[in-house]
Amino acid sequence: MLTVRQGNLELTAALGEGKTELRAPDGSGGMERRVGECLEGEASYRLSRSGRVLFEYESRRASFELEKS
Image 1 (cartoon, rainbow, N blue to C red):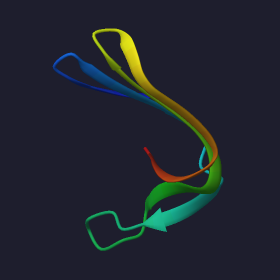
Image 2 (tube, rainbow, N blue to C red):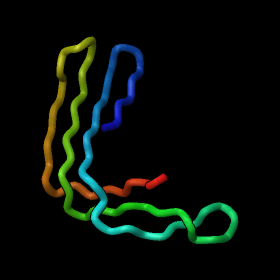
Image 3 (cartoon, rainbow, N blue to C red):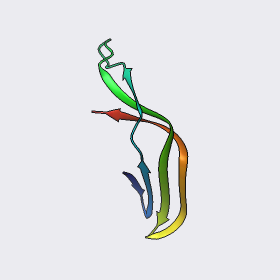
C-alpha cells in the first residue's frame, strides 16, 4: 500500500503483485535491478480530505510496475 499526503489531502493506492519480473538498468550499465510488471492486476485507490472520502475506485484491469528492492 502506498499513501501520499499533501496538506489535508491523502491519496492511498493498494496494488497487487507484479506478475512478470523484468530486468532494468541499475545505473552502472548493468541490468541487475528487478521490476515487477502487471498488465491486468488488481488495484484500489482512495482520495480523502480531512478523513472524508472524496473518491474511491477499484479495478481488476490495472497496469503498473513495481520496483523490487
